[in-house]
Each structure stands twice: as C-alpha cells, then as structure tokens.
Image (cartoon, rainbow, N blue to C red; front, side):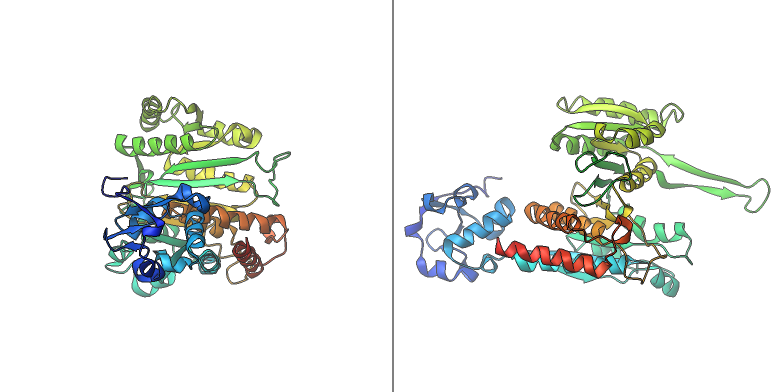
Length: 446
C-alpha cells in the first residue's frame, strides 16, 4: 500500500457525520471535515463490538482494492445496517466469446452461474459483452476477429472464452485465427491448468481418491513449439519439405519458469517438477534445464525435481501423489494437461487460464475440452469445466472468496451425484447448471 493509500487519520465513530453515514450511496461514510472516506479495518470487522475507530482512505476504490472480500464487505454492511450495494460494489467488465461447438452452451451455463453468484453475494458485479467471433463468422467474412477487435478486448477486465474449431475449417486456421490471435499479442504467456479429483467423481486410476491427484500444470503459452515459425517448399512434389521451428528465448523460458516457482511457493507442498526432453532435444530443452536451475536459487523453500516428458506420463499414471506443480513447454504441457484431466475423471471438468501476469492486457479463461461437435446441440455437454474456469477468473480478478464459494458449490453438486455422462451420470447441461445455481442461492442464507 503506497503512502497515499494508507489510513491518514483515526476518527471515533461518534465523530462521524450521521447524516453523511445515512446517505451512504453517495457519501459512503464520508467525513466532511477531512474530505476523505472512512471504513473499518478488515481485522476489526470480525468483532464490531470491539471497533473503536475508523481508518480514513482517500477513496472507496482504495478500500475495495485492499479489503474487497465478501467477508469484509458483508460485515461492514452489518455494522452499519445497510445494503452492500450502497458501498459501490466493484464492477468487472467481461468479454464473452462463446465461439464454436459446445462453446455457446457452456459459456451460457457459466454466465448463468456467475450471475446467480453476484446476485446472491452482492459484493461485486459482472457486466458481460458478447462477441460473435466464431468459425461461422470466419466463413462469412474471412476473419475470426474483425478489424479493431483486439482493441475492443483491451477495454475489458477479463475474457471468458468457449471453444474454437469446426469440422469444415482446418484446425490450424481456426486456432491461429482466434485463440492464438488473442493469446500471443496479449502476452498471455502463463497457461495455468489445475487438475484434481472432485468430491463425488472418480478417477479411472485404481485407488486414486479425492486429494490423491491435485496438480497445477503451468504451460508456456507464447512461443516454443507453437511459435508459428517455419514453412513449406516444393509443395506437392515428392521432395516437398516442411519445417516447424520451435523458438525458445531465455526471456520467454525464464518468465514462465519463474511464474511456476511462484505458483509452487504458494501451494502447501511447495513442490515443482520441471518437464523437458533435453536428452534428445539438445538446444532448446537444455536451455530450459539451465534456466530452471538458475531460477531455483531464488526459491530455496521450493523442492524441485526434473523429468523427461515421456517418463512423466508414466509417473502421472503410476504415482500421482508424487506430483504437485508442473511446468513444461507449450506442446508438452498441452499434451500432459489433457492426460491430467482424463486421469482426474474427464476432460469435461478441466479449466484453463491464459494469464498475462503483468496485467497489461486482460487475461483469458476457457475450458480445455474444445468445441466437441459430436455432442453440439444435444444439451449434454459438461459445464463443470466452465464453472471451474469461471472460479479461476474470479480469483484472478481479486474475488478469491467468491471463487472458493463457487467451486465449493460445484463440488457439492458433484457429490450429490448430479453428473453428466462423461462422469458416469445421466444429467444434462441444464440440470447440472440448475443444481449449481440452487447451491449458490443457499449462500445467501448462511
């Protein structure tokens, strides 16, 4: 907290202007004499009876940035017997890009759950703007993203993405035309893919129970094997040549590995596994190994081990408890995270966060399952991955408590046996969504 954001004065509650307190919508506990805004310290909110004074902040935003959690806001409102809406709850602008296949179905379910959450908690607001960028758009206009589209996306706090890919559009066209066209210019270099076995679901692994498989995979998301460098010559001839050049820059590798160490450091086990293939790929992968060793020196409290990617697949299957945080290249982590989702029960539950850790650009959040045209329109797609994705988005926006509450509601529904077919149940998309919404509504009575 900068010097301008620190409490500048202590004022007894009795000294506050009562008329200003009553007009909280416009004044928000304003002290007319100081010309500032007063709010309770987060620590004092736990016991309002012990509160003796209010620290003054320069503005509502200062308080909301430093103490904006569901717990602190609701207790503050309880002290003053007022609605959370009077505190000017923060509003986040979300770009929704449903795109292809089951993307519109699961994004609709995700927005339904998020709206239920904000209506119930009343501690923050979400405003969605829909962008009709899809393979249908591409077939009509020749573009997935219209001119000026990325500039529009920059205005939002986050991007809620469905899936891209259609049977009648080559995959490399759709991927590079939409998803990578956002990830790369927006420097979303950290692709974060958590995986765990939910309560009420089963892993296909023998004797793998809830808690035994709890991983976070960090995927380098801006270069490597998906750098887009290479070409083809003598097309159609017997001597045709195609090259696909992997690019590994020290800058790109180090920022990803450092992010992975920071992630591991925040988790209870403080364990990081670095995955490469440096025995066969003796340049880029050796650079990964060297940078990982250098960065490790800055994180003495994190235990590090190293695996070759092929050996890693067997370790994930045979000894899931031995893993926690994993970092790998763009291609390797892409493959390993799909395996991880299947080992946790279904690819239909796994989320993805495409993060710009500098926060210069909005980050993008999506389920990893893809467009799944084989079940599109049948109403049976699993929305759990999108719910978890939504929870990850809330955490990134600073709404950690709401994120935990949403994910707990989802697990409660799974534990009750309301599951789609991929998890061994018979519920459809709407039934799972309705069940989650009902769980969310219960939060209002607690």
